[in-house]
Amino acid sequence: MADPNWTTIELKEGERTDDLERCGYRIIQNPDKFCFGMDAVLLSGYAFAKKGEKVLDLCTGNGIIPILMAAKYQAEHFVGIEIQRDVADMAKRSVDANGLSGRVNIIPADIKDAEDFLQAGIFDVVTCNPPYMIENHGIKNPDSPKAIARHEILCKFDDVARISARMLRPGGRLFLVHRPFRLTEIFETLTKHGLEPKRMKLVHPYVNKAPNMVLIEADLGSRRRLTVERPLIVYESPNCYTREIYDIYGY
Image 1 (cartoon, rainbow, N blue to C red):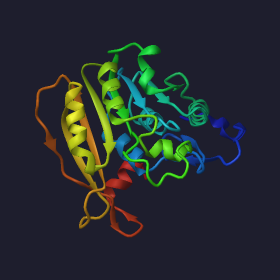
Image 2 (image 1 turned 180 degrees about the horizontal axis):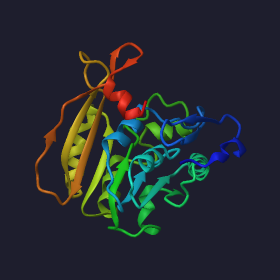
Image 3 (image 1 turned 90 degrees about the horizontal axis):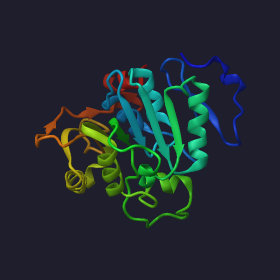
Image 4 (image 1 turned 60 degrees about the horizontal axis):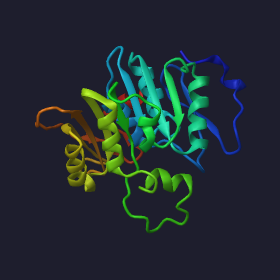
């Protein structure tokens, strides 16, 4: 269970804490810097880790994916890497306040430098909710935390695939959430780095709407065979989630 001392945590300006509805865990967020979205929650529900496994989360943001997965799975250890130090600090404080510091380690660093501080080939699972957008037009401030989280300013998808392949053991699993319009590029980049797409689930906002997210599992060094799973529908009607979404959120 979570550490009962959340009331003693000092929040910085603009920060708040939100209940994750899992094991009593909460998380620190700042709307001006970083708040997790549904994509991160869906990824934490799509990914899985077995007892004793080691999990690496790239572009971890405020640590939402390691914290949610630590609540659901008996993996031995989780590592989250986040390039924005103030966002990584939120993640570290949430981990500590939830009593997870023995299982979850947050590293403020660039994922492209991962081999400088992590041993390659030891992780069973890598998860990543990467920046989705390729182009920079429309960005008023490319140095803003939200722009860095959403656009490929400091991290490109090729970096994600390359580092995932280096960090995973043979047969290890990479879990991603991304945008369907980039599927061709995603598959090409994964296979270039020896990561074979094995499962794919499209996420539709409504049953009659086009998908706006895709969940992918790719295994390192696996044989070529892709299973396209039943799609996930988010809303039954406006402001009313489907039963599957409520289950993923833990309500």
